[in-house]
Every structure is written in C-alpha cells, then in structure tokens.
Length: 308
Image (cartoon, rainbow, N blue to C red; front, side, top):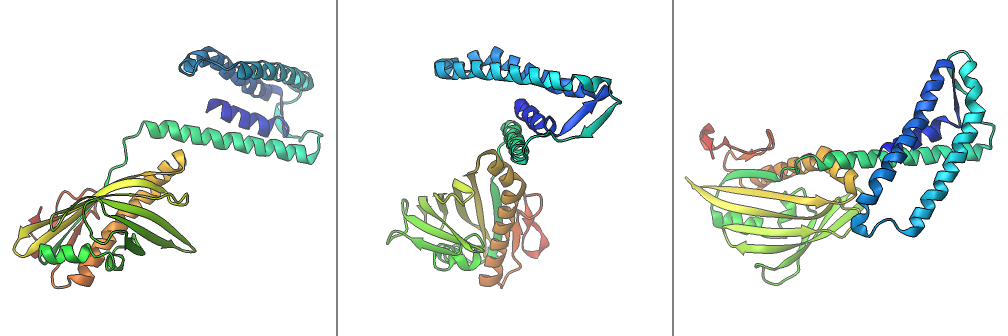
C-alpha cells in the first residue's frame, strides 16, 4: 500500500514539478521513502513467500533488473535536479520537455498506482472491522398463522409486497425442504437473476433458505436467511425475518455494502413488511420493528403497549 502511494506521487510530481531551495528536501524524502519501502520488502519477502516455496527464480531475476533500472533512474534524477538546491525556495510547475503522450501515460500510471493503494488500504481496514450485522425485521399482524403462512409462501403473490423481488418462479412442483426457486429483480434497464433453495420448510412455523446469484452485476454472491411465524396471543401473529449474505467486488464491494447497500436493504425489508401489513392486513394497527437503530429489541404492539 505504501509503495503504491509513493509511486503515485513520483509519477505525478517528478515529470511535472520542480522543488527549489528548501523544498528540495521534500523531493529527496520522496525517494528516500521509496528506498526504505524497497529495503523492507527485501527483508520480509523471503519469510512471507516461504509457505509458497520461496521466491521463483524468474521473479528474483526481475527484481535484480528492476533494481538496476531504478538505480539508473535515481542517478539521472539526481544529476538533473542538483541545481534546484541553490534556487529560491519554491514549488514550480514545470512539465518535462517530453512528448505529451508520455506525460499522459505517466499520469495514468500514477492514477492506477493510487487506486490500487486505496483498494489495499480499504482491504486492510475492513479486515479489522467486525462482520456486518445481519438484517432483522419483524411485524405483528392481526391474523392467523395459517393465513399468514399461505399468503407469504405464495411465490406468485410474494413480489406484490416484497420490494426485493420483481418475479419468483418455483423450480419444483411441491414446496418443501430442498425445493429450489429462481428470482429476478428489475433495476432500471437491468434485470438481476439469482436462485434460492429451502434448507428447512416447516409449514406454519419456519422457512429457512439459502440464496445465490452468478450474475456478476449482483453485489450479493450468496446468503442465508429465515422466516419465523409465531402466534403471540389475542389473534396476533409475529412474522420475522433475519438474513445475511456475502458480496462480490472485493474490498470495494464490502465497503459499499457496509456504507450503502446493507442499510438500503434493511430499509427495503422494513418497507416490504409495512406494505404486507397495509395491503393484506389493514384491519390492525400493525407495527414494523427494525426501523430505529436497526436492532429490533422491542416494538409497540396493539393498543400502544410494549410487546416482544
């Protein structure tokens, strides 16, 4: 990561900027930092590659060639910039007298080095963070377990209240443990497709499932979740879901999931449960848990009294 940022600075500054007077120390520090990182690599790489059988001969030769080329490069830079020390202190924009395409290429290389360094930095930070919390949502409805089960397990009705799906097709004649399904979600001009499978199907009690998508446009790679149905008395049923998933696109995908996608999915699930209540169970003052704090420890039940 450090080397990537150093390369980015070198590729952006050396062809375009002169460091005069006291600022020449900044110029020297940039190359000293590069040499320091290289020395650390030489010290730690043999141990880090030991489990892979050591450093291949071809790669070792490449390191030697690159070291010679870098040495020649540093020598040329030193000869060309030595006089800057005696000039009035200033940082001067003075592009080198080379073809424009070469300056542009160096700029693109610098941007690429910076991008890779940022990705590596995000990956290092993300590894130290706790795993993202699963999505939890609950709703209490004035109905029977049998009616709620029949309604929510009907794949033809499901997309009418669940914002997460546009279409669902069962891939088996009988819905039971092991039955697979195909789902689709329309997003602007694209349609994301994936599959699911019932891992446990206990009518009127629990539905546990796994889901996955091989579509490279889908952030979600695979996940697991469950639906629970529980009568709480007084003609009220609690319907709850919990699920989590793994994502694509490496560190960028994981950060995007933490910052944007997972919070949006939490809210989409809450909106779905709210629409289920409003569209199919309007006779009761239903409450959806999960909208505040993302952790539904309790929520208001019927009559405004704490429940759960």
